[in-house]
Image (cartoon, rainbow, N blue to C red; front, side, top):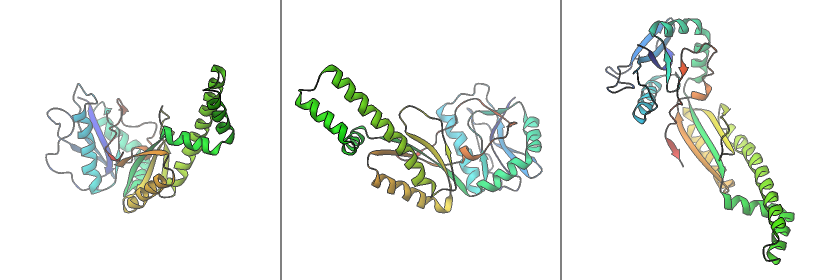
Length: 259
């Protein structure tokens, strides 16, 4: 039977609650595999593992419980190894890497921030900042909407201006928030977001980070900022080439603290 890995901790990590259940139906008992100074938090893996809501939440719950008691390197949902022995072998092979990461991430959590534009607000702002575009709009209005070619040209100019604003605003989101974080990691680009950033924040300074988000919202009302967190620091684990598991499915996204 395959071994499912939730995360990696120090062997001195406080014991998990007795009878803790993880993924699966019924929940598979969570256990700990140790080697030297390291421990892997694992359970048996169900044969039909899928990213079902129940299992996504169970994965997150195990990490939250373990993380509340000490530093844990979280693995993403769907991380599997062939068996317990394979997990222990990689703990031994990658001991230096995991011990360094545990030290670096101690007491820290992740906040993911996604930013997009309020379309109407950014359009008004782009026109306010661009006299040539305002003149084109006014000329088209005086001409009853303008010719087809004039409408196409205006649309292209507006699109270009909005895209340029997306680029500059993406830089501004990072600049404004990274000062309140220990580290930042850029997530994959996706349609609809001008920025997708994860910030590593110490638990003791999390209020300051969230205050920086609110300040950015107030200063840039044309931005729609969505904050997910606090989360285990998935984006800062820096998995080594011989990660003990192969991510089979996306990680649980976590709950949002604000929308």
